[in-house]
Length: 343
Image 1 (cartoon, one colour):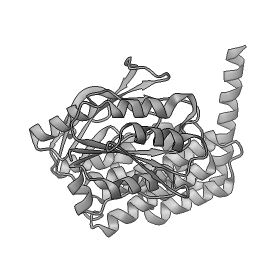
Image 2 (cartoon, rainbow, N blue to C red):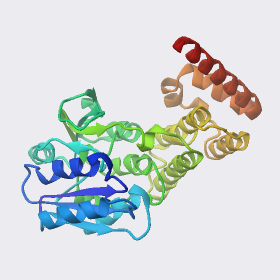
Image 3 (cartoon, rainbow, N blue to C red):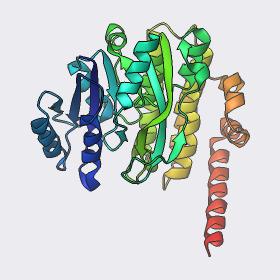
């Protein structure tokens, strides 16, 4: 079999989201493929929708059901265990792809000998095949046979996992999978997986449609989600150590951990959670300095983290309370200015 498409599904029946996704998959131009839809204990009519596609497309659509919710990582792992294709692809069940998405990516891989192939994506807020704002997800200097420098680049900026196809033998041979039971599972899996592939190519087209809507994971922040991002960073750190990558890529791993566990979480928590707790801010600082106490000297951190963020982080490293009070004040002033501008 040429391809296995893995679709994790949780409560996506509303507004025709799941139907639009599945319609784009059953009409792919690539030959000899399977769609492995994993319902992750949905409480809406998503399972019924999937079963209807299974009845309508026997042999092409296969539905699996988790008895308890394992988040996307658990659903993806269920699909990986059942996958038979030479290539594997993942798609979020509220997104969709062009009819030739998988054909183009696989052809690129077969023509070049690549074991990893990606493309760009487009942001849309309605069900359409019109191209919206295009996001370049990887750069051409990351492509080709992957030497150490290109592996460093992909470790730092792997990009989205759903806009790529993967040779399944690499996943199977290296026992690659996803963290289960947390949000942001790709923050761990993407960088770690990238170190095992040997040749990356890219189709320079926006073939994947990323649907922006208010119930998407990225559109609201809770402490639970912040903690899940912290867990993903810890799993990445531990996975790189256990698999023998830490010595060779310590500088890159330090920055990725700092970015995921600490910087991104600190500022999204303070800005997005309604009543941020000082104790959580203390916990973030402690977890970061326990593993990488000298992170502020990392050249990636100094080059890629904004100047204001670096100043605020430096303040927090001196005083949790000082940072907390100053940031809350800055946020209050910013919101007040926004309200005044709207009048």
